[in-house]
Length: 502
Image 1 (cartoon, rainbow, N blue to C red):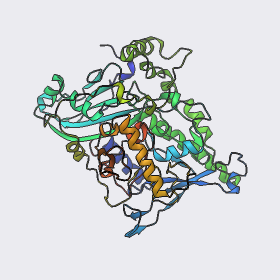
Image 2 (image 1 turned 30 degrees about the vertical axis):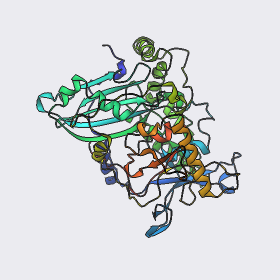
Image 3 (image 1 turned 60 degrees about the vertical axis):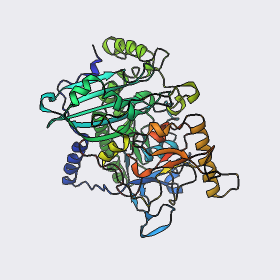
Image 4 (image 1 turned 120 degrees about the vertical axis):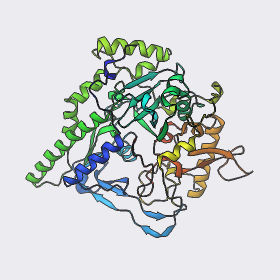
């Protein structure tokens, strides 16, 4: 069937982004760039001194770099023999390029009100789950690209699949599901496994070997959801800014261009400050102007209405009809812009309004249980460390600006507040949403299990278990949990998945 011209891949290359970035990192190091892969930025260094804010009336400070967390804390926050304090990396310019829904980006957006100041919509996301297979030679067609829409999803749920025939007999396949889905019984992981039961996939994968699995959220908001791109002392680039072209299902090209433009602005501003012998914060506003004058903004503006056109009572049918007309004929040259209404978490419906989805059982090796797949990610976290998936009042780190705990006016201790918050989480998420995270998480991190009578943090015989060692850093929980009380923070050192061919 005809497809939007943005989905054309003639002349493109199919490669592993993991391998590409590893190669690119080597090129950067050869040019003198220092890369610290074992250190995760945990919080922004925000300078509120009078010298930094003398010409600023908002009192929000200036970003002067990033801090890492302490390492060598046990699960209860006590120092182990291996304890080392966190480090502070000072910088004249801080560019945030964390991918979708980065933890430092969340801090910057909140502290400087980067959405509110320009009237940007809330960001909306898709959850992508993918696998890489080595297929039989007779099923391998190098360079072939297939896109799908509809099944296994229903007509009310936005999403689609892909098949990319990579080099060396490898095939990448996966499914992206819009996280504004309503049915709390939906499982992105099990939808992918069900998709592979289709005759096309059965034939493609028969006799093959699955070699990798992964999952990550992607931005789907388009220009409507792009916040102000600069703040005192830095800027947002790439997917931290939300520059994915959703119909094209690509964002790497826009991310690279935004980085180039930000670097040019930073260089020019630093030169100016040196010439003037000035200590004022670096002004990155010219970067935003340059981006909006570039082909990146033109490309995003042209497709701005395609993704939100699926958010009507007509579901994917209405979206396909409008997107076809807009992408083929109108090309975004219309006086209107569709808005995103609310957050992805806010679109989640109560379990009482839906029936549980009956997924087919796994048919190994074609489809497997979730933990078999997670084992292919080589995910590793030290078990005896503070849980990096934080409910309110559970952070053990000092100066943790990522802690989303509300202000306490009850007079309770931090431990009592943490128990109260956990009980509320279980009550709402189990009682009203049937334990959504137990199905939505693509790595089996969250479980709502039976609790002993009177157990702290439990509700109606259920308690929450967070298997943080399984986390593949997809960020779904932070975005989709209906109570919006889970904050994804960086774990110790280089913990997380070790993707190599995804």
